Length: 128
Image (cartoon, rainbow, N blue to C red; front, top):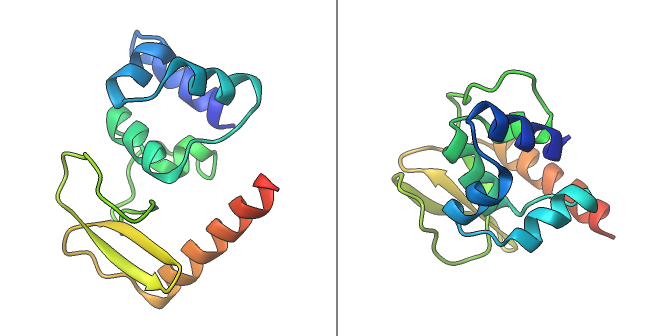
């Protein structure tokens, strides 16, 4: 589903996947893997793509048919470290193994934590 949404968004924007990848710092080889091997971008890359096209990550992943950004918490998994996003964000620790990037000032509820953990566990299982 991701690749179909990504290529559709590129087409609507009058561009192709490789120039979008270059704009967000992703190599053409990675983009080819998304297309041919049906792999998914990591959380930080999904967030960059969503920001680039002004859509939600859920839309990119096919979890919703509504491309509008949810007004709830902007939460994506990233490796501990920094990001080059141009939106005010902060790191919040969910547990000893998970740190998330959220829009500055956003509170993460217990329900959010459970959902994030569930999604990460599902993605981890798919990678195996």
